[in-house]
Length: 68
Figure 1 (spheres, helix red, strand yellow):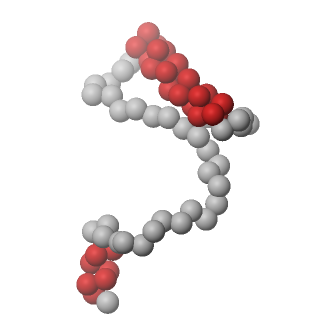
Figure 2 (spheres, one colour; figure 1 turned 120 degrees about the vertical axis):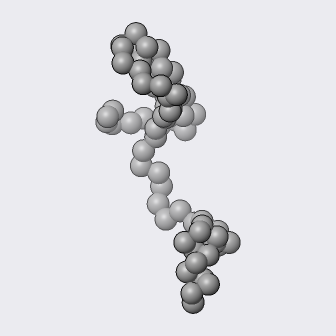
């Protein structure tokens, strides 16, 4: 049992992942190398991320209800 727990603790698990439910959200994100402070810097990045989410929804022929 101890070896099994150690394997799981280190992410070693050969079992297949079986999702139990349908995805309830769609998102896009990025990581910056340095802090972005101005709207001028953030606006084009936010547009790109929004368009990425939009493409995903259109490809699945679905729509969202809430934007957070």
